[in-house]
Amino acid sequence: MIRTRESKAGPVGVLTKVLRVLEVLDAAPDGLQLKDVARQTGINKSTAYRFLAHLETQGYLFRDDTGAYIVGPKLARLGAGMAYHATLRKFSRPVMQRLWTLTTETVNLGVLDGVQTQYLDVMESEHSFRLVSQVGMRRPLHCTALGKAMLAHLAADERDAVISSLRLERFAPHTITNASRLRKELDRVAQQGYAVDDEEATTGSRCVSAPIFDRSMKVTAAISVSGPITRVNRPRLLSFARAVREGAQEISQKLGYVSNGRATAASA
Image 1 (cartoon, rainbow, N blue to C red):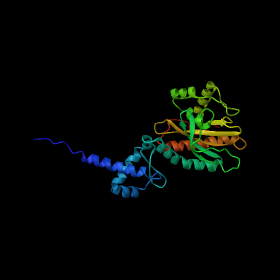
Image 2 (cartoon, one colour; image 1 turned 180 degrees about the vertical axis):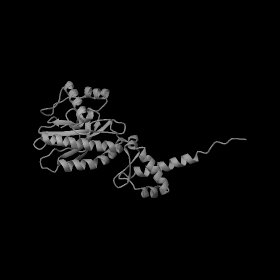
Image 3 (cartoon, rainbow, N blue to C red; image 1 turned 90 degrees about the vertical axis):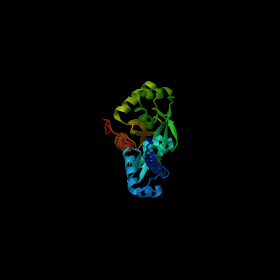
Image 4 (cartoon, rainbow, N blue to C red; image 1 turned 30 degrees about the vertical axis):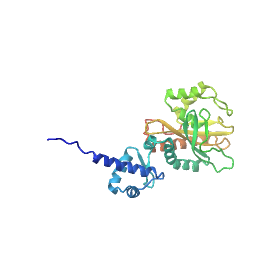
């Protein structure tokens, strides 16, 4: 008897439906409810739910506070960097809002861009005298709290490669311009879990930042609070450090990061 090749139509049909789900979600950056996914794809609601639930479990999708499904960081990583940055901003915004309300100072979100820090999102303080940052702005790693927070948590070989490529230019009274001193500073940052810019980038300013990690346990971004030294004194700096670390940990968890024993509170 002649044996016929088994049909692959079933699996291909399922794959087509899953791709259709991903396409409609990709076209909706603010997310879609289950009923909207089912309606736009023409897939049965119960079937759509199974697809969505599985993709969420695997880290490809995420549900926000309203229950809407959004392209998650794992899937966004497979696409363009811009898509991942949009996901990162969306995950970080609620935390940034809380920090902004708590501290009344400027809150920043940044990522590594070669040997610089790129600002992805900024919520400016409402004080008339405040630190001003701009989305898209790039600043050196060695003199910013954002940069030091990320640099300190890179793999040792990657960190050394970046440090060797840095121009340790002086921008303010306390800028670190020596590679050996910078390495010691980064060791301290890694140990305490947050970085401080104490008049290192701009005269008269202080900033505190904590790293954000993704599912692969790699540093992917950092969040910070910055303000003038007249308001960000030592007691407030320590209080801000605790709040920033807690916020960074919350964002990391949304990105799929599972703590491996890192400290959970800033040192007093």
